[in-house]
Length: 404
Image (cartoon, rainbow, N blue to C red):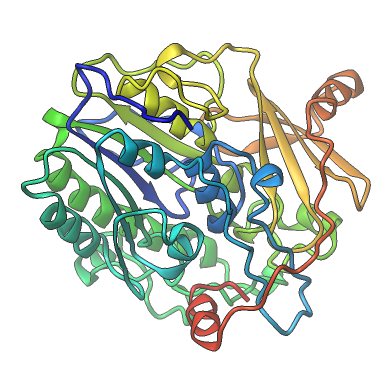
């Protein structure tokens, strides 16, 4: 970090990174003020991914990762990244007051102590998180906020009016949680996936309406990034996922495991009050956020890795998502519409062609292409050491969120 970073003369007064947890690539929010593209998530679950979003480092470098096996009796909680070069530290040094607002506990465990002010909730709706942020921001001249919304994360419980509007069959027991048909999807009723996606869309409808009203009040003077920290699989490729053996064992559902496209790519929108929005030839990655925001506020000598989206991304960029939660580590590397998923431990490599709106078609790449993509993966692979166990209170909250 520079000794005394200075914002540029045209820097926006406010900056907000707004993360919608578990946001699938094929469910980009419909917001009048923002145009969405798609980015690669740094990791397949919240703790390592949001750490990357605030440090610019991939999970294998910042080390905020922990693996568990399906039969483990305890939660493995990563150690918090201990470095000092974080986005809130740089912006605080440049004169911005900083705020963390998190709908649930996991982002707070990753980022606590990095912000001057924070609010963390047990499982709060978007309206609560955004309203409290707006109250904190009032009368502050310069501010940076990181906000994480949990409405799309299990348990999915949007307001009843949104459930009715999407005609969700609420008679299906356990539809909102992440504990049904995770090991054997063949036992699910025929309408299960369709109804789960309807419920998910109902929750996104609520988030869209809430964001629309709040964003309209702040866009004139605020640099805004809206992005998912990871996606959410809904039983796509669940049989293929079993090739990786101990994949949670929530095969092809939820997040934290194999970086299938529904988990590894996420919608992304960027708004700058006085600059044109970025255009992307290549794929952005969530870990680009610190460098992009420093560029957006005119800090000219950031120490962050990654690419500034305002400078553009070349079409041949390769970028990685790392699965560092359940089972053996799997990494996915994207380059354009080509992708490889690799497990070093299981010695499995899958090649795929990526669909623009989300999802992938497997067994479409030549051996030469797959070798080229695998060569772009990091050499570092996690040894699955468990860093530490969560307290009983944290375990209860994580279990309610499906991390078991």
